[in-house]
Length: 264
Image (cartoon, rainbow, N blue to C red):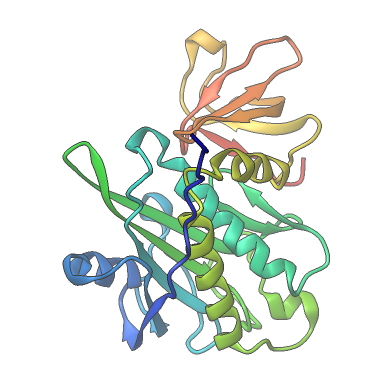
């Protein structure tokens, strides 16, 4: 019998525009039950944007993309949930590639960098039910037209600071939303190629670089706060980062267990 490949056609995003909100992720989480796959909530002003592990996100009003998309990835197992983070990060990278010739990369697990400066923060939150992913909320803060940053964040940058002019926010929003939905809807069939592209676009993908261990890791002979040289070996489907050290050891790190030492 002939083999028929399942074809997934991406839906069109559904948009909800809010003038002001504390957090688009929180709003969408509170209204997830009635939201369809591909629902996008975006705001002109976000007063309490959230980043990874409770960090805050600075965004000037009417200058940037502050959005969250609700996803219902029926064919992605919880053990492979990092596929979704990879899809979100690559959607942002593909969008920025339209405006920037080079220098855009993904800093593990899912910050987006231009050279050594952060242009985008991503917060992906999953809701599990019955051993499956009921829904995922992908929050994206993308610096577009902001000219100055006032917080103590060490290395922010905006698209305007890179290319020297403003970019229409609706153009970025719609391309990003459509690309994000397209990539997520290509899973799981496209997981292997997305993962390969994710690895190829990683910040510090090649060569030895300096990292800082966050917690005491006796088994890996790494003390808390110790800096060491390593290169990226792999990222697992659950997001665990494997680094290869010159001595042949390959320590594995979860989120917030290792830091990139910028400038080294």
